[in-house]
Length: 375
Length: 203
Image (cartoon, rainbow over all chains, first blue to last red):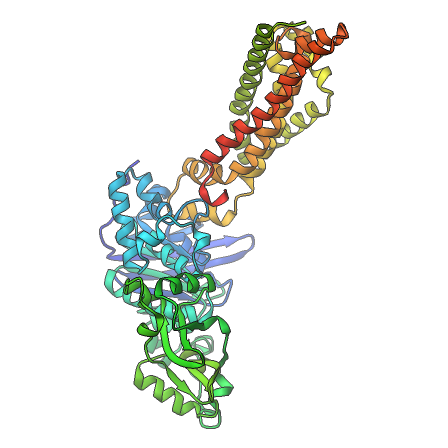
């Protein structure tokens, strides 16, 4: 079966009077919302607010009881669901990679069902893996469980892009990752988003993520849309207490001067320590096993710097030692003030620093985590 | 004393009987297992029937064929099949229904049709359970095929019964030993097939 493309680009998506009932309660009630072509719209709200239901009504995974969803003027109910879904990229929290298929087969599944020929599928898979910074020759034939969480998430994204859809639906794609990893993937995703320039509808419950990624944010509560607008509008003109609460307009950094780095750092974990003498290929394997994206390189007791998975993937010289590729990393003393540390981080453009007690690493400082804890 | 040719002929008949039965059982079981996924009622009926047949002694199942189907190859196939169905249906059904619902949900989300979900997601994930069932059914079929010699199916049972009646140990062994070897070969043949179709991550 070959699926016709329904649209080359999205001009607008309209929700009109959408209502979905579950038993006696409402999952979504009288929703009117317009999504503009090319924007990243965030759906955010407490659990049970109807944000995932709203997303799933776009690809007819859930059918509304009344109202209509139209994409470029086309009512979704007039389109066969399978065809509709193949025109959208879909990414979910638990990634949903099929465990019995290799990475290549996972990404190439829908192209295969669309009867692409073998060479074209392989070419596309390589292209996409390169795009998400996973060297194809290294990853194509692996099975999902052989990949780290971060790598799997990248594969999930690559797979959603397989058919080059004009619209992406993302349901808490980074929700299951630890905070440091999530931060890194968000940064990467932001770059990708600007490169592919597609319409994206993104469900999250993390307001930080929403503020970083969203062009506009739609706040939902108890099955209703409360407010929709760009981040600054929500911060400066929240329509009610709930919105103010969610975007946290009352956040004050009043303790900034009194706190030290050690109060706000995350404890150091040995899994981040790598010896400078091991070569970069082995390091990639080991980082995969330990499920980390950044490693700190030590030579005996001396801190040499940091390496990220992205850096290592890019330099493909086999015999390279970690000591040669490590980039400098900011270090702080436990008793440095938080204000000082934050401004140092900001000036250097880093968001991660290591806290050293004389020669021993005792913690990691992540700028956004610090801000969160300051509330 | 039996001559080698007789044993080889009987072994061949035995193999044909066992594999024909298994083949038919698989062809019948897999669609039933899939259909049971979509209908609770059918699942109930199929499982009840298969369990019931399983409870009847093998020899009785063989004997009961005679008034309905007479004697010969076909009634033997039906008798063995009645016993071989259950492990295959039950295991295939369990394998198919135990696939992580999140995977099915995701497969729907990327635009797989029901048929494609069954073919590409459910079936491969059910292979291990399914093959365990087929192997067990194979062993069962092999032993019941000995009994069906009584209703004229031919096969190694004929030689074994001859040996038993005549108190002739050599004849008895000439039938029993190939039957034992066959049991092992059946297991190996399906293990090889399983290795071939099972995706790499499960091996």
